[in-house]
Image (cartoon, rainbow over all chains, first blue to last red):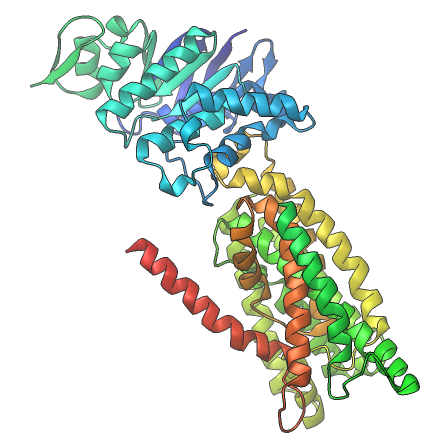
Length: 246
Length: 320
C-alpha cells in the first residue's frame, strides 16, 4: 500500500505536488523556509485538505476515510510537540491508543509496553514528563506515535532542539521503524541528516517539487545551489557526509 | 483514579449528614425535637444540601473540562460566557417582574444560558478553533455583563434593584425541592456530555494538530463542551446565582490525586466540587454574621481569589 499525493495544491504554500511514499523507506522532505514542507506533511497526514488534487492511502482518498481509521494508519508527530499536563511517560504513551477505542485492554497494554521498550523508556515509565531531558522527552513522544502501531510514521522536524547524540539516536529509531516495514516521512532542516539517513529525499521549492530521488541525486550540489541559493560541497564518505558552505 | 473517587465519596457521605444537622438551629441527632426537626430537615436542609452537591458537581466538572480543553490550569467555566448569559436571563426575569411566578426565574436563566450556547456555536462552531471559541465566549460574557449593568441601572424599583444585586451574589438560601428537580436532570445530562468528551480532551494534551491526528473531531468536541458546560453551569446559575471560582479551584485540588489526564479529572472534580460547595454552604450557615448569612458566592470568591493569586505566583516561579 502506498501513501500518495497527486498534484496537490493549497493556497500559496503548495502548487501542484505529486509524490508517492513507499513503505520500508525513510523519506526526507527538505527545502528552504517557506517551501511548503510542513504543509505537504500535514496534507499527507490528512490534517490539511488540499484545495485541488488528492492524497490517497492505497486505493482510498484520505479525506474519505473515517478519522479513526486514518488515525490508526498514520501516526503524526508535530513540529513543536507540547505536553500540556505533567503526565507520566506511560500515560503519555497510552495516548497513542486513543484511535483504538474498543480494542481489548491486553492489546493496548502490549502496544504501550512494546513502544516503551522500543525506545528504551522502561526506566522512566512512571516519571512525569517535566522531569525528562529533551532527548528523553523526544523519545517518549515518538513512543506515543508507535503505541498506535501505525503503518505510516510522519514527523515534522523531529530533530530540532536535540543535541547531536540525541538526534543521531532518534534517527536510528526511525531507521528501525522503516526496517520493520513502516513508511517513515521526516521533514528535515539539516541536509546532512537527510543525506546520511534517508533512503529518498523530496526537495520542495516555493510550493513545487524541485527534486525527488535518492539523497545523492536530490541533494546534489547543483540542486542545493539552485534551491537554497548557496554554494555548498559535500565532504566525507557515504553515510558520514558533511556539508561545507562557502 | 479509583482512590480519589472513593476518598471523595467517603468525604461526601460523611459531610452530607453532618451538614443536615448544622445551621442556625442545631439538630441533636440523638434526641431531636421531632416535628420542627422533620420540617427543617426535609423542607430546608435536605434540598439545600442536594442543591449544593448538584451545583458543585456541575461547576467542578465543567472547570476540569474547560482546563483540559484550553490546556490551561487557569481556565474557568466563566470564560465561555454561559454563566453571565444565564445570569442575564435571571436578571431580566426580575427586572420585568415575571420572577414572582414559580419556575420563571430558572426558566429565564436557562434561556439565557441556551442563548449564550447558541451564540457560541454560531460564532465559533464552524471552524473548531480553540482561540476563536474562547474569544467568542469572552465577548458573550462582556456583552451579558454590560446588559446586566444596564438592567440594574434602569431597574424599575429600588426593590427590583436590590433583589437583582442580592441574587447575583449567589446563594442557596430559601431554595426548595423545586430547584433540585430543575437542576438535577440538566446537570446529570451535562455531566454525561463532559464525560463523553474525556478521550478527546486527553488527546488535546498533545496540542490541536496531534489531537486531530489521533482522530479527534474538533467540532464534535466543541459541541460536547458547549452542551456539557452549558447544561451544568446554566442549571447551576439558574438555581443558585453566580458562584465563581469552584471550577477553577477544584480541578487543582484533585489533579495531584490522579494521573493528570483531563479525562481522569472529570468525575473526581464533580465529587470534589460537590463536597466543597456542601462544606462552604454549611460554613456560611453557621458563621456568626450580623444581619444574616454570608452569601455563598461571596464566600467562595473570598477563598478563590487568594487561591488564584497563589496559583499565579506558583506559575511565575515555575517560569522564572
